[in-house]
Length: 172
Image (tube, rainbow, N blue to C red):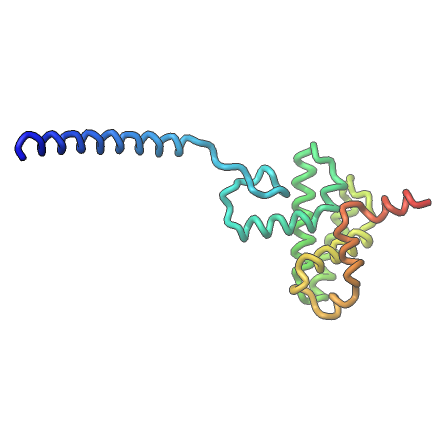
């Protein structure tokens, strides 16, 4: 067992050291690699390592606020931030189950919306469409009365990509 055993141990030790070096190099390369891109199609710039529930909420919010984003100029970052803030306030207003509090929030929003230069739609039409979209996406947060106010077709029409005002203009 003398020389053969020692030789095998030396060879094994060298192989282990080589494997450890390769693993260390691989880990160092992984650390240098940029973060993965977002898996969300709604927010392409969003980091991809967000928890699934956060990505799901962001996707829901983007689908909800689509009419707002369509009105604004996508090349102006400040304008897009204002739209995002407005969308969050609308979202919070519709999350409110107390109808009196919701109405108060929407009345506050009406004043801010009137000052926005890119606002092309009437506030009442927009709020109704956004309410329908919110009911479609999150029906559990609304009362039975609110859910029964609109038919399934109305809710699906509100979720359609085109604005109702554009469709009316093309029909005549």
